[in-house]
Structures are given as structure tokens and as C-alpha cells.
Length: 158
Image (cartoon, rainbow, N blue to C red; front, side, top):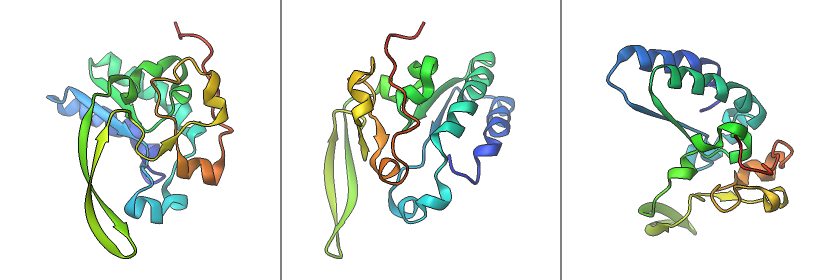
């Protein structure tokens, strides 16, 4: 999800539903990596904007028996829809990623025991019901915009 497509996500989801045969969709927050990092300010969507459209996307998906999950969004942004977070279905995995140090590129193994991938927990996360499941907010987002959008979930949503 970027500023380029955020206003079209409902239409994109309706197109996916209409196409048929697709059983699951993952809406991904912009990961601040590579060109996503280089152009972060121009591309990243404010979490409050996503917070408003997520229920509409969930409603469309549920109506059509389409499994929908969200990657890279703190659980509190999804609120009562936190169970739609990809963090809740995370399983251990091994990723081979290209990294750079002092101008030299190399491959690095990263064992994913937890869905962090550049995400952090802020002070607000300390008292959240989902603090042990949620991966938090992207560190780059926090550095640039803070954690004003984060609202810890106090109890399990009903």
C-alpha cells in the first residue's frame, strides 16, 4: 500500500473478488527497504488513513469469503479487527536477504521467530493486550512521524 494506490484499494479488492479463484489477499504496509526507503516520504500512507479504510476492506473480503490479512500494521491500528493482522498467523521462517555494508553487498540469513522486519515497539506498546503478538510499528515510520496514531488495546476485542 502506498499513496499511489491507497485510494484504489477498495476497487482493487472488488476486482480481485470479481476475478474469482483467489482465496486470500495480503495488504502490505510499505516496508522501508530499498526504493521504499529511498522514497519513503512520498510513498508511505499515514496510519490514520489506513485505519479508516481497513474496516471497508475487511467488509468486502468477508462478504465474499475472501481471506484478508494485513502485513506491517500495528494491531492497535486495526483495533477490533486486530485478528486480521498477519502477525497473528506468523510462523518461524528463514529469509535470505541482501544487505550492504560499506558499499559491499552480501547475503545474510535471518531467522524469523517474530514478525519484526524493521519494526519496533514504542513505550505505548508496553500496556497493549497484543504486545507479545504484534510486531509493532516500522522504526522508520516512528522516526519520521512518531507514535501518535498508536492506541494500545487494553483488553481482547470482542
